[in-house]
Length: 396
Ligand code: SF4
Ligand code: SF4
Image 1 (cartoon, rainbow, N blue to C red):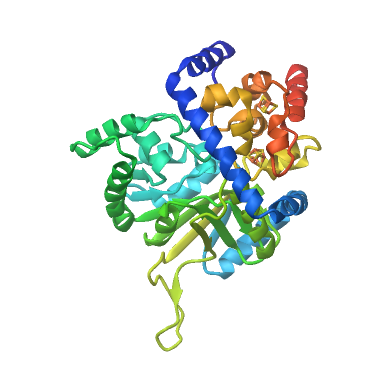
Image 2: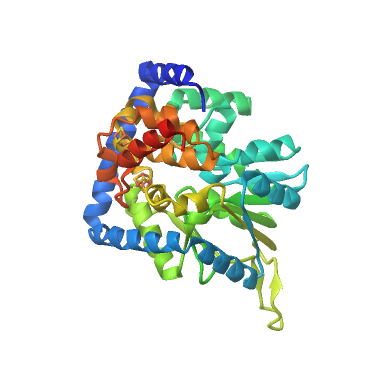
């Protein structure tokens, strides 16, 4: 986290950047319209959100037990599962599986961002491709994502065309369809040549060990299914008791993320298998032969014990609060580092283990309460920001 002075400078620069304001204005309008449509078409989602809040409360109070249960289920399904208490431990486990000199295709993962997963693997001599379109643009530009769900929300099509023309050595017009087709051509070959696929998960069912991934592009489906080895890095807070609970969490997540229904919901419970020849179960049919799941703690178990801040673990990462936040509307992803907005202040404090790291974020929250109104989990981020200020001032 930068110093206050550097942070303030970043905020001011972002607020004066016309590309950010135009992109955000469009994104906010379309997000609001999409959520409105999704909730109008499926009004039961409102009631279901209350139910999901109950599921999350129960899950966080039993987090360790449920993670243990999920690990056992994944092992029963012939996958391997680990609990990493620190980012270094998670990176060590992943490095042990990956080694070096590998080609890796990766789905967007905030937990991966949290521990600088891509950078770490690249430093060890691996070639890593982000496969989410926005994340791929951000990777090529060497900048950081601006939103949980829309990492390249601030990059206009003209800049994307210029970037892709440079990468391919051929003129790509500033036409979104042509740009999407170009990225599809570049990445298609990577999916099928990759040694390893990686992703996160939106929710995990402890009873079956099933990972749920909500997506539209199809890149997660390919990253988790095409390479021979699949690795998932997932925050411990994502585990819920049953597959029935997980379906509810997934449905509420995608509606509040602005989708009536997403193009894909992947359910992955173990490595690919077949019993088609003499009924002998053999692993590694068309999908990966090996599957590894790493559950990351990194401050989450401490957060779960905190009577005020544990609410932050109920976050579904729908991204809705950011689109309603007046500060985010003018500064985008400058209102944060890896985690954005008021909710991001709490996450920053706990995953870095240093409350003071979240000071710039928590002091820039306006306490307007708009994020809480939009939040499907009714998370009181403004109140938590005030409490965080108090604790930072007290040095506790
Ligand atoms: S309370 Fe803070 S984080 Fe929430 S919308 Fe207002 S300024 Fe943004
Ligand atoms: S705090 Fe609420 S609105 Fe914001 S991302 Fe999390 S669940 Fe969504």
